Amino acid sequence: GETGLDQTAVNSMEVWGPTYGNMLFDEDVSTNRIGATGEIWNGFFFIVGGYYHGGAESWSNAIVAFNMSESREWFSFPLPGLQIPYNHASFLLENAIYIAGGVRTGVSKRIYEFGISGRGIGRIQPDLKEPRASFEAVVVPPNSAYFIGGYNEDNKALATTSIFSHTRT
Image (tube, rainbow, N blue to C red):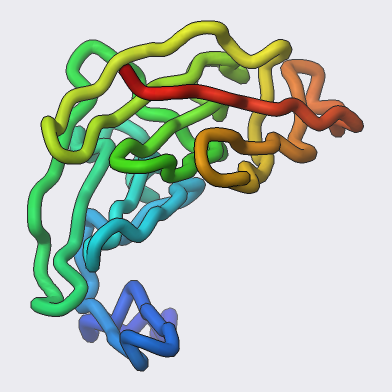
């Protein structure tokens, strides 16, 4: 018998917005991720972290940027020596994307800063007060974010909200 699986290429990412209209990107391993986040900056869509359904080691580009007006990949960025997170939160402050918490080998409390212009990444201090995954980051301009919900190492829902405040140097 047949399984019903159709091998036809499908769109794997849809973008909609009042200024962009409706755009579809063709299937691509860069967009086919579980537990990723995304940020929009100057007409570029950044997909951050997550993992390919074939497993976390199936690809090494942790951050992929798409030029939305040209519907094509602008650049991809590996995290050399760092473990690619999933179920994390990301948020944009000025010209940097921040990656907080998430899961890799346990639930993390680390925060990383990805400078978009220089395409560099580094860990920033202090860490989150407690490990946190599957949470939301709500930006409060110009330099803060609230971390809401999620779970910790014990898989227990967190009833706390943390405030992140950072000024780039």
